[in-house]
Image 1: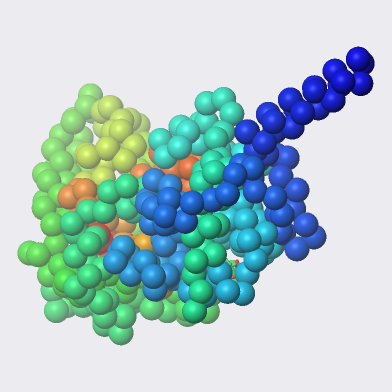
Image 2: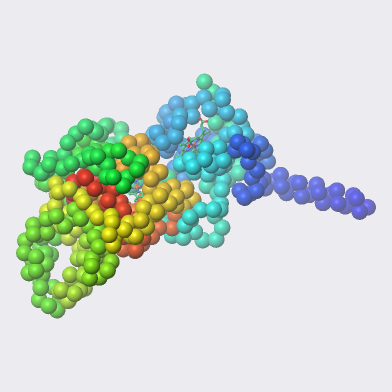
Length: 157
Length: 281
């Protein structure tokens, strides 16, 4: 009886973790900055990822990166490298780690961490210039990161 | 600055990025008379840059042209307003700026060396602080709001009479500790985007960030008339905008942090010419 109960508790806990994914402070990065498991516990949706890549209020990735497949969405920046072909030479785990927190892959990089909520200097309340109220939300949700990773994996030469 | 990471591209920015490439080799001569140094060897203290450039260099040819003729430069209208204020008696002492200083041209050279240590007050003063000190101590008049319209107009007038003179802000002596404080702020990565001034203006000048062509973030052209908001903009307001865009809590205009940052950023432009009021997008 006791055993059965604890087993069902374990299943319950696993289901919660599965539904909520992993919180920003609990992501495990490998020595090279990779994140193996889906942050949301769900697969990503590449079409949703595309919207996030180009939208100013979301990833706005093209502010810094040129992507030939996104040519119809002006304007692409030059601060980061082109992402053409990145789905060819990078794995899902590498891409997930770079988008979630690129500082583990590239020390001191200018690229912001899209799944990080602590350790900032004078964090603000979005773009108001005022101090942040309460806990910060990550720039992208776990599922949005997965969607972006799914999109990046479509970028093959 | 157009907010890089959120919505809203202005028509002007769209136009500039689409249709016109900046002429980065161009030279700036105002009214076919005042020669402006827009590129110079970096001052000794700047370890990561070899050449410094005015923000004018990175603007479109159209925007550049607006600054080459005072009749085209919308900022000069505000200089005219300030000339009126200059001659207006205000406050309990029956004085105007003119009654102590004569013609505005008497202040030629001032813009080039500010912010500057003031021995009596034992503080680093921006021009705005000095103007307010004149207003309260000499004229018995009310302070003007920091970066408010009256103040910015007066700063534009004071800058305009120094155009073409070489920026030469002192970084040592009693100003040194404020200068160091400003340098620390310049290299601090602020906000949820975790970006320092240097990330954009030192490591990435001349690169586009979305539709914005990044300059070195020099302040030799302040106050700047921006086509985006169609008014003169002060240095501290610009600092606020840039820090806000890193998703950070900014400092306020006129705070010690921004006075220190202004001193440090001004010194990064030692060798360029004063060119305010300039025109930017």
